Length: 600
Image 1 (cartoon, rainbow, N blue to C red):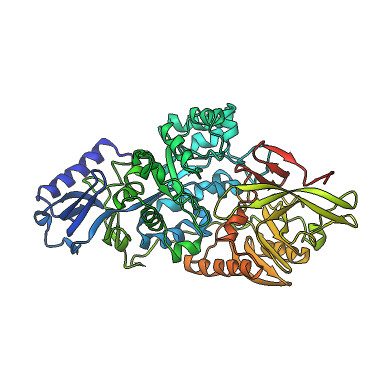
Image 2: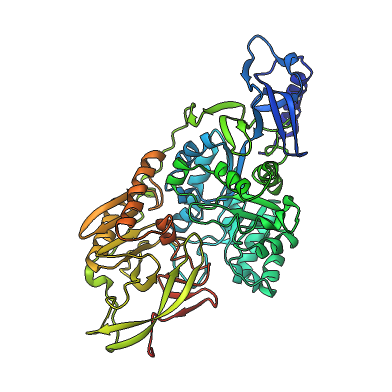
């Protein structure tokens, strides 16, 4: 947050007084090994003196900063590591509120997050973003919000529950807590010079804030160069080493992501370890983390460990999760390193290579120890309107999920092909059989039906498609109101009656994810806030989400985090084939195509 001259001066006078020993520190961390990411050094026998939540002194001996009321934390030769920062992520993907996400990640060493709430923006627009900004502001760690840029993500290709305009972006840039523009997903709009997209980026640039990028294409030719010329400053959609190299050379910060279902770090680390690129051009992030992943495996600590396991030196991996991120967002004078004037976000770590975090301190306050939260978090209550977002015209029936055709016989179907652990899909073409005017799946055991059910305006529209790769067996139906990015309801399955039961169940609970097998609900996580987030504790949500994943497995699906793969099948800004409320979208050409073609 910007300070006026008087406040800045008063603050610095306090730090100077502590550093000089004229005023005692609030607390002192003694005898640790300083992981100085700013220089790449590990400096033994280091003390840290903290005042008003920030570092006043860091050096070999802070005994002169200790008074009768100074709290002492013994580092006992443990490493002193800057708090970890997630440079790009979506709270809503954790299925929990900001507070519950923070509760889950603090024990894992995350002390700062840059969040893009474009999921809730697609449901409620600017007022939904404001809810997230307000909740972020009261957290004990740093949560900066990026103003969503693309609502809808692809104008003309989908119908969201709300829209974001350049005027909305300009207004949000004046809000405390807004750090920049969320990922600019409409990359064709940018390289084609769309005035609205460029106006949003201009409003961000004029506010001297960071413009998030999203170039989800393998084409590194003129469209890529046109997109970069539009003003994006980072990108997390790389999946190949050549993607990372191209982005770094063009001046973008290349964000390497390891989420619950996106495993893109290992393929791109060779840009540093083999091609010798400067690691300052790279940032580690998660993008989307399932609540179960947060509880069981971790958050940014998980990403850092993964990067180390794939060849990065521990210091380099830590720099990519601390200093690089802070510098990118213009906050290196606040966070990202252990140095005077910065927030006292300190991790006490016993082993760097395994990143064994034994204590977490944020803003000078001890928050967690040995993997357990030790501090209370503030309460935040969502208004009633935020829990009324699933609107169906009428209950759905098995008939709602039939796929009809004008004649019997063979057709070529355009099929969405799921790719495990990656956001892109494949555009498949398969022969299907029509009997009695209806597509049957009996000759295509690898296929399932997919439906997009409009849920914002109660139009009653149901758009049908086919999907391959889930491996479903037997009778099943699965539904979710987490359906990036327009967040209508997605339903997939092999048996229309189970699909109807799944959809109607979510209408009754106000949203969430559900699995039905043989007419019985076998997994359900309720998410009444915008149909995207639960109002329960993170560990409870993780247990329910695990029941949903177990339901996927009971239906024959063996994909890793299949529910996250499922939730992306309506994301019409990532190739190759998606479904929207308006039809099947060929994302490589941004054109609608029919489900069935006349000739086999």
